[in-house]
Image (cartoon, rainbow, N blue to C red):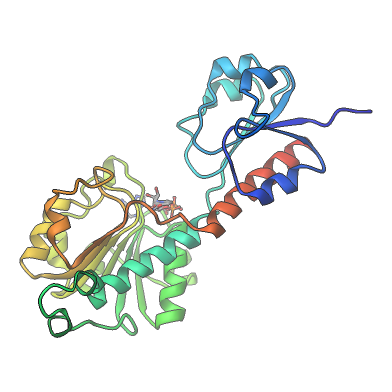
Length: 303
Ligand code: NAD
């Protein structure tokens, strides 16, 4: 009987990925009853399906049959990509699998910020009288960065809430932004018109501190700001100042410069600021999609 190619999965992933792989491969798990370590399968392993576990060059050199490292999620900081390339080992990620989940989270934070949900759930004093929320419908959404997640936010905002959508992304042609239903604008114009600012850029030198106090004060008074991208893109001291001045009606943060944000951080004392602990991609659907797409990358490589 011919041996099926062996896939090693170090940590639990969605069951559907295992079911996808099992008819075509032998699955060895690094967890649970009968757990096998990488070294126990190194001489037979053909594929690894990992979440955030490490696969370094030394491991690759111990695995002569290894052909693919399929990452469940984005980012390759745990995989030695240079050694993989030298050895002809494919390395894949699932960059779009969680975009919808993060986009929905951005919309949730926008709604929370505009409706004073943070103030309401604390229910301090007479919250019911204190809150005068604003509908998202018909307002103007400004997206900084117009990649995978921002496009989903734009679609939900335009179709679900009849929002006018402005987008600023120097690396995306204006025609592509317009074709996706948003109005391409420069950052200054976006800030001057957006009732809702949502950030969707990577954290790189050019975006570190991109939104500071001058940018926040350039927004119309009563605007809200949401960051589901990376802490550091938005200056948190500036956000605190703009909220305390009453210039911003509220904010929603899924990401912060330090994660988790310390309990004593002054932003936590601001009831109009809703903070979630980097949970934008934490949905059943995203976890399933990431695992199944990674399994499909393995099957395509072994076909
Ligand atoms: P993407 O690469 O598809 O899009 C990013 C866009 O930002 C690109 O189009 C790029 O041209 C643009 N950009 C870069 N520099 C810019 C600048 N200075 N001004 C304006 N635009 C600029 O990325 P994505 O998948 O949409 O992810 C967006 C962000 O969300 C990333 O920071 C990512 O790390 C983060 N993210 C967060 C979560 C979460 O759980 N909250 C999950 C996934 C991704």
